[in-house]
Length: 246
Picture 1 (cartoon, rainbow, N blue to C red):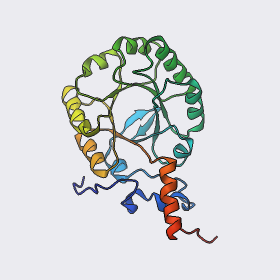
Picture 2 (picture 1 turned 45 degrees about the vertical axis):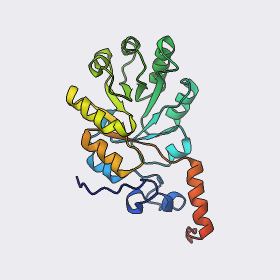
Picture 3 (picture 1 turned 90 degrees about the vertical axis):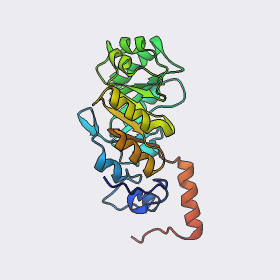
């Protein structure tokens, strides 16, 4: 793996790698997806297994337009509200790739999360994910009721990873900002070979750091539709982007 990594935003700078704004509206017929996963991920991540698929990249979104127009391997459907069966069903039915559903953590725990986990599996979720505040006893109860993998988010190192695994967690999702790489290394030391996905951040440098630290798959947070329209309209005003002749 090359150490010379472009540190600019993956969505804004390296056009050869991200191929984003140029292709957003005028993609070629051979490539219908507009939000492209950086090759840094596809070429260097070992991947995790979900629904018999090798997952190296995940898009963090519940926006159907973004989900439809990206080439990530899976969808991470987590949002800052109580879990919704309606949202779960719509996203799973809509997506043509595995969907990981959030079922609680801070706002939702106990019996409600158990019901959400069972519902997510019934709808066809590839896995469920809980946040760090989630209690191990609740994970144990969920593990007895579902067969799909349980993912636990990790945001700080003051945490018993082995207790989480003993409760029934199958994969860790490290989402700790600037501390992400160091926590990945800590997990790899404590529990070697345990599957890890990690939030990649907005630069190639942060993605690269997570990969070399041991992340098996990377979560990408795409720009919002509002941000995309702002960039596109700015280019229209400058006369940069023009429709291709048929």
